[in-house]
Length: 96
Image 1 (tube, rainbow, N blue to C red):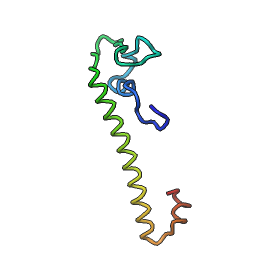
Image 2: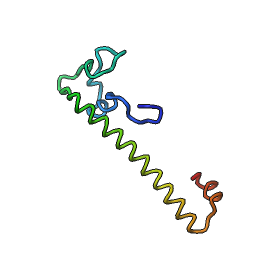
Image 3: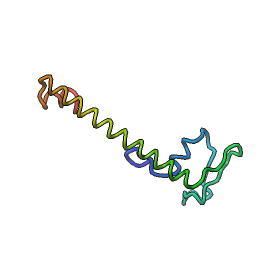
Image 4: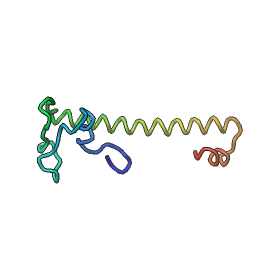
C-alpha cells in the first residue's frame, strides 16, 4: 500500500487471496512475480496476469471508493446549503 492506503504492489493482491502466510518471495529485496514462492502446498500459484489484473481491480475499487466518498460529501454540503446553512456553518459543524 502506498501512503494513501492505495494498493500498489502484487503483494497487496496476494494477501487478499488467502489467509495466513501462504506466499513469500525468494528475494525480499526484489518482490517481483518471478520471485514469488508458494509456501502452502494447498494453494496454487496465481498467474502473473491474475496478479496484474487483481492489483488493477483493487486500485480501481480504491479509487472509486474515494470518488464515492467525495460525491457524498458534495451532496451533503449541497443539501445543507439548500436548508439555509452557510458555507462557514457547514465547515464548522461537519468539516466539509
